Length: 107
Image (cartoon, rainbow, N blue to C red):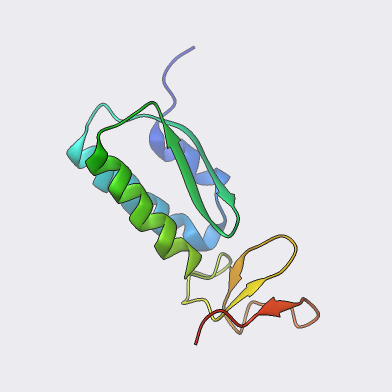
C-alpha cells in the first residue's frame, strides 16, 4: 500500500478546522519533510494528530494546533464561545444548537 498524502487526512476533521489542519500540516512538513500522519481526527473538542514519532519541534506544532482548534468553532471556523456537553465540540454562538447544553467556557 502506498503512502497516504498528509492532506488526504483533512476529510477526517470537521470543516471548521480544515484551515487549521492545512496550516498544521504545512508547518510540520516545513520542519520535517518526511513527516507522516498515521491518524487525524476530532477528539474531546480538539484536533488530534498522531504520527510515527516525529521530532519535538513537530510535536510542539501539533500541540499548538490542538489548542487553537479547541478555541475554534468546528462548523464554521469562527472563534468558539462555548463547548458542548456530551460529544464535546467547540461552537460559536451562531452554530451552536440552541437545544444543546453548553459549558460557557469562553468569553
